[in-house]
Image (cartoon, rainbow, N blue to C red):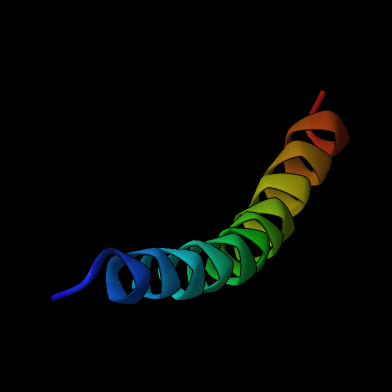
Amino acid sequence: MSMQTIQNGYRGLHLLFDINMDRVLFLAAIPAALYIGAFLGSL
């Protein structure tokens, strides 16, 4: 494996990770918002 291949693979993995982190944060934000809303509603 050449250095170029490793760099290309790392860049692709990093891009994939960035996209997935956005999705994970978005999916985590929905239940968090619902939970906070329910908590505030119960006060």
